[in-house]
Image (cartoon, rainbow, N blue to C red; front, side, top):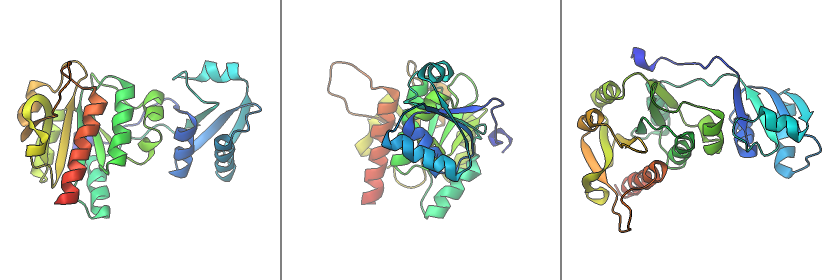
Length: 254
Protein backbone atom coordinates (compact mmCIF):
# COMPACT_ATOMS: atom_id res chain seq x y z
CA UNK A 1 0.00 0.00 0.00
CA UNK A 2 1.87 3.04 -1.24
CA UNK A 3 -0.02 5.47 0.99
CA UNK A 4 1.39 3.70 4.02
CA UNK A 5 5.07 4.09 3.11
CA UNK A 6 7.22 5.12 6.05
CA UNK A 7 7.58 8.88 6.32
CA UNK A 8 10.48 10.71 7.97
CA UNK A 9 10.64 14.28 9.26
CA UNK A 10 13.73 16.11 8.04
CA UNK A 11 14.57 18.18 11.10
CA UNK A 12 15.82 17.05 14.50
CA UNK A 13 13.15 15.32 16.55
CA UNK A 14 12.76 17.03 19.94
CA UNK A 15 11.66 15.11 23.04
CA UNK A 16 10.76 17.10 26.16
CA UNK A 17 9.66 16.14 29.65
CA UNK A 18 11.17 13.67 32.07
CA UNK A 19 8.84 10.74 31.43
CA UNK A 20 8.92 11.18 27.64
CA UNK A 21 12.74 11.26 27.56
CA UNK A 22 13.12 8.33 29.96
CA UNK A 23 10.68 6.18 27.97
CA UNK A 24 12.50 7.07 24.76
CA UNK A 25 15.69 5.62 26.24
CA UNK A 26 13.93 2.56 27.62
CA UNK A 27 12.34 1.84 24.24
CA UNK A 28 15.76 1.89 22.57
CA UNK A 29 15.25 5.10 20.59
CA UNK A 30 18.50 6.66 19.36
CA UNK A 31 19.12 9.99 21.12
CA UNK A 32 21.93 12.12 19.78
CA UNK A 33 22.14 14.85 22.43
CA UNK A 34 20.70 15.39 25.88
CA UNK A 35 20.30 18.82 27.46
CA UNK A 36 19.89 18.85 31.25
CA UNK A 37 19.29 21.74 33.64
CA UNK A 38 22.55 22.51 35.45
CA UNK A 39 22.48 21.46 39.11
CA UNK A 40 19.27 19.43 38.89
CA UNK A 41 19.57 16.34 41.12
CA UNK A 42 16.02 15.03 40.91
CA UNK A 43 15.70 11.24 40.95
CA UNK A 44 14.08 11.02 37.53
CA UNK A 45 16.73 13.30 36.03
CA UNK A 46 19.43 11.05 37.53
CA UNK A 47 17.72 8.02 35.94
CA UNK A 48 17.76 9.78 32.57
CA UNK A 49 21.45 10.64 32.93
CA UNK A 50 22.25 7.00 33.76
CA UNK A 51 20.41 5.85 30.62
CA UNK A 52 22.19 8.51 28.56
CA UNK A 53 25.60 7.33 29.77
CA UNK A 54 24.72 3.72 28.93
CA UNK A 55 23.81 4.85 25.41
CA UNK A 56 26.90 7.08 25.06
CA UNK A 57 24.71 10.11 24.46
CA UNK A 58 26.38 13.52 24.48
CA UNK A 59 25.14 15.26 27.67
CA UNK A 60 25.07 19.05 27.87
CA UNK A 61 24.36 20.79 31.18
CA UNK A 62 22.71 24.13 30.44
CA UNK A 63 20.93 27.02 32.15
CA UNK A 64 17.17 27.29 32.50
CA UNK A 65 17.19 30.20 30.06
CA UNK A 66 18.89 27.98 27.48
CA UNK A 67 16.36 25.19 27.98
CA UNK A 68 13.49 27.67 27.79
CA UNK A 69 14.84 28.99 24.51
CA UNK A 70 15.17 25.47 23.09
CA UNK A 71 11.76 24.26 24.30
CA UNK A 72 8.91 23.78 21.86
CA UNK A 73 6.33 22.93 24.51
CA UNK A 74 7.25 25.40 27.24
CA UNK A 75 7.16 22.50 29.73
CA UNK A 76 10.53 20.79 29.42
CA UNK A 77 10.80 19.80 33.14
CA UNK A 78 14.56 20.39 33.06
CA UNK A 79 15.42 18.02 30.22
CA UNK A 80 15.33 18.07 26.42
CA UNK A 81 16.58 15.36 24.06
CA UNK A 82 17.48 15.61 20.39
CA UNK A 83 16.77 12.32 18.68
CA UNK A 84 16.79 10.80 15.24
CA UNK A 85 13.85 12.04 13.19
CA UNK A 86 10.54 10.39 14.03
CA UNK A 87 9.81 7.48 11.74
CA UNK A 88 6.18 6.68 11.09
CA UNK A 89 5.12 3.06 11.04
CA UNK A 90 3.21 1.12 8.39
CA UNK A 91 -0.11 -0.70 8.48
CA UNK A 92 1.85 -3.95 8.33
CA UNK A 93 3.67 -2.92 11.53
CA UNK A 94 0.29 -2.73 13.28
CA UNK A 95 -0.77 -6.16 12.05
CA UNK A 96 2.62 -7.62 12.98
CA UNK A 97 2.30 -6.24 16.52
CA UNK A 98 -1.17 -7.72 16.89
CA UNK A 99 0.04 -11.08 15.59
CA UNK A 100 3.01 -11.07 17.97
CA UNK A 101 0.57 -10.71 20.87
CA UNK A 102 -1.83 -13.30 19.49
CA UNK A 103 -4.61 -10.69 19.37
CA UNK A 104 -7.12 -9.42 16.84
CA UNK A 105 -6.02 -6.00 15.54
CA UNK A 106 -7.37 -3.00 17.47
CA UNK A 107 -6.59 0.46 16.11
CA UNK A 108 -7.64 4.08 16.29
CA UNK A 109 -8.28 6.04 13.10
CA UNK A 110 -8.20 9.80 13.68
CA UNK A 111 -10.04 11.97 11.17
CA UNK A 112 -8.31 15.38 11.19
CA UNK A 113 -7.44 15.70 14.89
CA UNK A 114 -5.74 19.12 14.96
CA UNK A 115 -4.78 19.62 18.61
CA UNK A 116 -1.39 18.00 19.36
CA UNK A 117 -2.39 17.60 23.02
CA UNK A 118 -5.40 15.53 21.92
CA UNK A 119 -3.28 13.45 19.57
CA UNK A 120 -0.72 12.75 22.28
CA UNK A 121 -3.42 11.87 24.81
CA UNK A 122 -5.08 9.47 22.35
CA UNK A 123 -1.76 7.74 21.65
CA UNK A 124 -1.27 7.37 25.40
CA UNK A 125 -4.76 5.91 25.81
CA UNK A 126 -4.27 3.61 22.82
CA UNK A 127 -1.13 2.19 24.42
CA UNK A 128 -2.71 1.68 27.84
CA UNK A 129 -5.83 0.07 26.34
CA UNK A 130 -3.72 -2.39 24.35
CA UNK A 131 -4.43 -0.95 20.91
CA UNK A 132 -1.94 -1.91 18.24
CA UNK A 133 -1.66 1.42 16.47
CA UNK A 134 -3.03 4.81 15.51
CA UNK A 135 -3.71 6.02 11.97
CA UNK A 136 -3.64 9.73 11.12
CA UNK A 137 -3.99 11.66 7.84
CA UNK A 138 -1.14 13.53 6.18
CA UNK A 139 -3.14 16.73 5.71
CA UNK A 140 -5.30 18.99 7.88
CA UNK A 141 -4.23 17.25 11.07
CA UNK A 142 -1.51 17.29 13.70
CA UNK A 143 1.56 15.21 13.02
CA UNK A 144 4.07 14.00 15.60
CA UNK A 145 5.61 17.02 17.35
CA UNK A 146 7.37 17.64 20.67
CA UNK A 147 3.99 18.52 22.18
CA UNK A 148 2.49 15.22 21.01
CA UNK A 149 5.44 13.27 22.40
CA UNK A 150 5.14 14.94 25.81
CA UNK A 151 1.35 14.53 25.94
CA UNK A 152 1.74 10.84 25.12
CA UNK A 153 3.92 10.42 28.26
CA UNK A 154 6.31 8.20 26.31
CA UNK A 155 3.64 5.99 24.70
CA UNK A 156 4.71 7.23 21.27
CA UNK A 157 7.80 5.04 21.62
CA UNK A 158 5.72 1.87 21.86
CA UNK A 159 2.56 2.53 19.82
CA UNK A 160 2.87 2.52 16.01
CA UNK A 161 1.57 5.70 14.35
CA UNK A 162 0.80 5.48 10.64
CA UNK A 163 0.34 8.54 8.44
CA UNK A 164 -1.79 7.95 5.34
CA UNK A 165 -2.89 10.01 2.35
CA UNK A 166 -6.56 9.11 2.44
CA UNK A 167 -8.43 7.89 5.54
CA UNK A 168 -11.42 6.55 3.60
CA UNK A 169 -9.26 4.53 1.22
CA UNK A 170 -7.25 3.16 4.15
CA UNK A 171 -10.44 2.04 5.90
CA UNK A 172 -11.47 0.19 2.71
CA UNK A 173 -8.07 -1.52 2.55
CA UNK A 174 -8.29 -2.53 6.20
CA UNK A 175 -11.79 -3.91 5.70
CA UNK A 176 -10.34 -6.13 2.98
CA UNK A 177 -7.99 -7.43 5.70
CA UNK A 178 -10.88 -8.37 7.96
CA UNK A 179 -11.29 -5.24 10.10
CA UNK A 180 -14.56 -3.62 11.17
CA UNK A 181 -14.95 0.07 11.97
CA UNK A 182 -17.01 1.95 14.54
CA UNK A 183 -17.37 5.69 14.11
CA UNK A 184 -17.89 7.89 17.16
CA UNK A 185 -20.89 10.17 16.64
CA UNK A 186 -23.68 11.47 18.87
CA UNK A 187 -26.28 10.20 16.39
CA UNK A 188 -25.18 6.58 16.73
CA UNK A 189 -26.28 3.55 18.67
CA UNK A 190 -25.29 3.52 22.36
CA UNK A 191 -21.87 1.85 22.52
CA UNK A 192 -23.01 -0.78 25.05
CA UNK A 193 -25.40 -2.18 22.41
CA UNK A 194 -22.73 -2.54 19.71
CA UNK A 195 -20.41 -5.49 19.16
CA UNK A 196 -16.91 -4.04 19.39
CA UNK A 197 -15.03 -7.34 19.65
CA UNK A 198 -12.83 -8.89 16.99
CA UNK A 199 -10.66 -6.91 14.58
CA UNK A 200 -11.83 -3.39 15.36
CA UNK A 201 -11.03 0.17 14.37
CA UNK A 202 -12.41 3.09 16.37
CA UNK A 203 -12.79 6.26 14.28
CA UNK A 204 -12.64 9.58 16.13
CA UNK A 205 -13.23 12.88 14.36
CA UNK A 206 -12.10 16.47 14.37
CA UNK A 207 -12.50 18.46 17.59
CA UNK A 208 -15.05 20.82 16.05
CA UNK A 209 -16.72 18.98 13.19
CA UNK A 210 -16.49 15.34 14.23
CA UNK A 211 -16.03 12.57 11.70
CA UNK A 212 -16.48 13.71 8.12
CA UNK A 213 -19.47 12.41 6.15
CA UNK A 214 -17.33 10.47 3.67
CA UNK A 215 -15.39 8.70 6.41
CA UNK A 216 -18.55 8.00 8.42
CA UNK A 217 -20.09 6.30 5.39
CA UNK A 218 -17.14 3.91 5.27
CA UNK A 219 -17.77 2.69 8.84
CA UNK A 220 -19.75 -0.41 9.77
CA UNK A 221 -21.20 1.09 12.95
CA UNK A 222 -21.93 4.57 14.23
CA UNK A 223 -21.67 4.49 18.01
CA UNK A 224 -22.40 7.05 20.70
CA UNK A 225 -21.37 7.55 24.30
CA UNK A 226 -24.30 8.04 26.72
CA UNK A 227 -24.20 11.54 28.20
CA UNK A 228 -26.42 13.00 30.92
CA UNK A 229 -24.97 16.50 31.39
CA UNK A 230 -25.90 19.91 30.09
CA UNK A 231 -23.40 20.07 27.22
CA UNK A 232 -23.53 17.85 24.18
CA UNK A 233 -20.03 16.59 23.52
CA UNK A 234 -16.80 15.25 25.00
CA UNK A 235 -13.25 16.31 24.23
CA UNK A 236 -11.93 14.13 21.37
CA UNK A 237 -9.27 12.46 23.51
CA UNK A 238 -11.75 11.78 26.33
CA UNK A 239 -14.23 10.26 23.87
CA UNK A 240 -11.44 8.08 22.47
CA UNK A 241 -10.63 6.91 26.00
CA UNK A 242 -14.22 6.02 26.84
CA UNK A 243 -14.61 4.03 23.62
CA UNK A 244 -11.22 2.37 24.06
CA UNK A 245 -12.23 0.91 27.39
CA UNK A 246 -15.58 -0.26 26.07
CA UNK A 247 -13.56 -2.25 23.53
CA UNK A 248 -11.38 -3.54 26.39
CA UNK A 249 -14.44 -4.48 28.45
CA UNK A 250 -16.05 -6.38 25.56
CA UNK A 251 -12.81 -8.18 24.73
CA UNK A 252 -12.40 -9.28 28.33
CA UNK A 253 -15.97 -10.61 28.38
CA UNK A 254 -15.88 -12.22 24.94
